[in-house]
Image 1 (cartoon, one colour):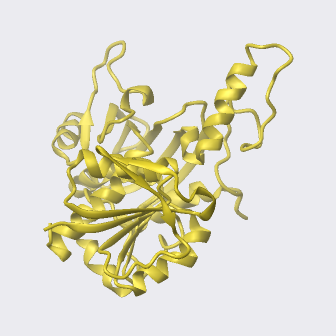
Image 2 (spheres, rainbow, N blue to C red):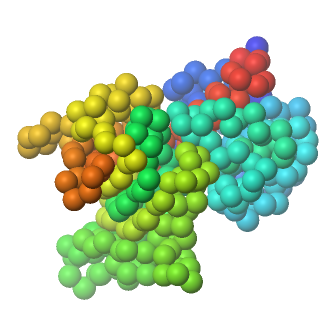
Length: 340
């Protein structure tokens, strides 16, 4: 016996990836519905060998459906997620709308699976921000061993995190640079993204940080431990898919780099590729389409008593969004609903 699953926002990058991953992981599906806005009504989506046509999110009846994976942005989620939840359908939301709601669990299954039982307060579970998700997968097993005091992270985030329009903008600007007189002006971003980096993701806040940086702070505290201090600088780079992060960690207790490497090798969801030689590390191009969070460049930080540096890379459309949502669905089914 399987589940009746809804994908809201099925025509977008993350929605399509959700369908791919549900199929790849043989999620126990009895029936699946794909929803989109009215302008995309009837668009075809692939689910394994099956072709599905989108239905209208505005008029869809969620009664009798088990789970709805939402990838529609905060405004649409605000309107439709409570309707689904009220109809008895558990919402797994990829937007930022519910992440900081104390009555909504924010879950990375490798890190805080026990939080899934808190879903019943609102019938909603939140999926974390892409940059946070991959980082906390690496932080949690190290935190369990040596207690993390402070994290300093710089991100190198791909344009797919901004959606299809951003990917098109990078492609068009890149082509334009090779055709004199056909340069493409920025539209999605505030400055040219091709052959450039932009230290600005999401809106600026009063303290000078951006909302993306604030998300990493708040979400790490909610998912791992509220006592961890986090400071972040988030940067958009001209990469299509795959987020990278340079992470500096200060611990309460000393943790040797070799022990850290062994801990991470045994941790769920992580693959360590860490050879001190040319090419002995993972780059975003190599992580695309993979489930894992890759860790490289593990080394002691000699400038503080108990410090480590590491390099963290993951497919942001997968672990940073669609994969984590499907893993939450698997966790919910296994621990709570128990139908599949």
